[in-house]
Image (cartoon, rainbow, N blue to C red):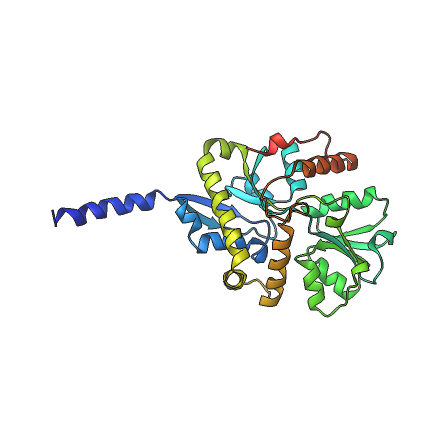
Length: 311
């Protein structure tokens, strides 16, 4: 038996390794603290505990995360709720397996200290797709005749004073601006989370076709990711160590202070305004509000129901 036991172990161990299901996850932008929960879930072994061999693949500048899932290059991605609605309406059924953001991070920031909602005819930079498209629809509904300037480097134009304002996110572009030493008074910021356009943003999505054939893997990824975010909330400094390793490996120009500010704001936005809790769920009223605004702006022709988004 002493000779047989090691042989049995050699046979069993490869089988255990093979049991790990390969799962490709594509966050919606480059490596940063916005995705700390997923990095932590991978580094701390939470995905492995669920039987998943997760590979995190960030998108290139020329191809979005939505393109990745549309073309079958990943099993899951993160999308703002409004973009998910438009994607489903466009013919690609999606399933939300985890909603991390409970509030909108979108902000309009004035370069000259004015209230952004009074700046008629202002030159404003915006990202072409994602949260930018929906935010532009809202601004146009408010009757503001902004001159939109689409760019991948909105912050640079803002800093140079080449535009009057910019559309950005409170956890990202806002802190990049402050880092340059530019003073931004609170009156010069319109925060969508405090107004009628407070709509949940980042959630994790898989295609419905994948969910129907790989439900176990999708739910395992969601459980482990949620555990990763819970760990990050309780171990923020160690989480930042992990984030900084990712940014270094992927050659992202950043620093720890910026990522620390980003992480704190991302965690804050995960807390529901009504309960103060991280509920990790899609709110029905948010879906209804998003549909109403997208329909009114012409971005949707028919509503996408909550049932179409959930498992």
